[in-house]
Image 1: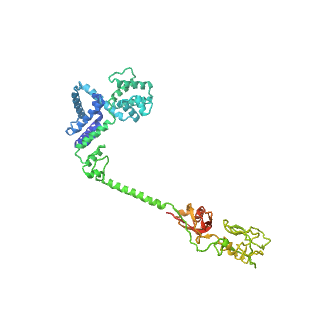
Image 2: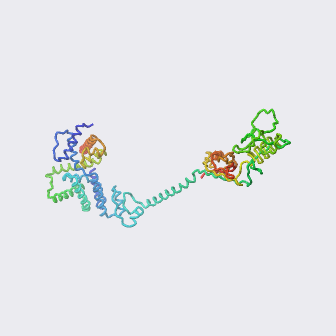
Image 3: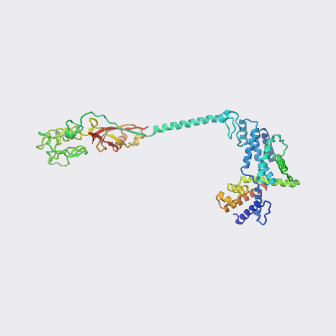
Length: 178
Length: 373
């Protein structure tokens, strides 16, 4: 029942975006983490993942008029575009895109992508001080000492915040997946 | 509470993740291992502003291809619950008054009435600002004092020694003696008189003896011929001792309790207190005094409450030292304002009136206006 409602809502959103591209914003918001996580899993580089994600969404916006509802989630259509963009990128670089060997492997990869998408969303929900430490540590790649100086706190306090933030993320992930 | 060892272990493991992304971390606590797994996934966490920046770029692209008008774009944005960049203006009027014409896209709903309400609110605010100034000015308690010199009759004012005509002050007395009052010195000068002076004492058995005085301002330097007995200094009769042909009491040919040919308790040929020639009045060679220090009088609480206004006229003598003496209410207002006027004028300081270049005492009237603005 819930899935049916989701499908109906998503279909209405897609139809609205087809009438007015500005309504694409809602589709973007609900699929950003998934697409980004899909790309980041494969390229393993933040800057490159961001560039590719931007390209994927621009392509999706440009081709939203050609989308035909076939009962599949909109995310699947987006990930299809993502796969093509990645393949083009690899081709330009002279590399080959590693494709899953079988359905089991494909499902495992999809689970990991979903998990990371969830993780990226959960970071946004962390308490401000914990989020600050996570952003500085993992995005800016600052040392504990540097973060302590920036935040005006002791190194021990920053380490504790880091520990607590990761524990919070882990417990929320468990809660979502159990 | 977390173990410091675990916290340290986790931090060390994260450092290893950054240094060697593919390295396997072993020999760590199970909890730390789980957290390191989360940390490994966070290495590709997008920059916090990337998501919003990409959304803005996408919306700019969407805006360029949107078939909707500005108003429809706005409505669409409201439905989507997002803030979108504004579309380019379609006409000059939209660029100048986008709110007035309500054709532009923004992050809030546009209505023509907003412009009118804004103009109205500004007009009301401006009116309040302007009128408040007037209101404060009109309701501010303002105390205005004016020094008004009542023009006196022009006459000659001469010192006692040279007086040939009657002047402002004077006195007279006598006890119907057959002889003119004898010459002598004045009794003690005082502004209040308990007993008149007598050269010939008629009552030898007075039950209450008081020092004889003459009502003359203390600052007035009267002629003193250093005569041994009491008497009228202006008398041409050296003796025998006589209280004079006048009536009342004291010494002289006038009436009253003073000394001289005048009437009253003073000295000389004039009327009332003072001495022959008395206190000067302005004119006839006597300059007007000028107030140089005029502290404001206070409004009495009851008069302020009743919003009572008016003018108190005080009569006073400005002495040569510039101080006000003998204050007397000529025109009363009541409600405590007379007292307030006297209280204030007592503190006033004058540049004294002058006659032939010398400071002299002069009688003036002063108007003290009480107004509530």
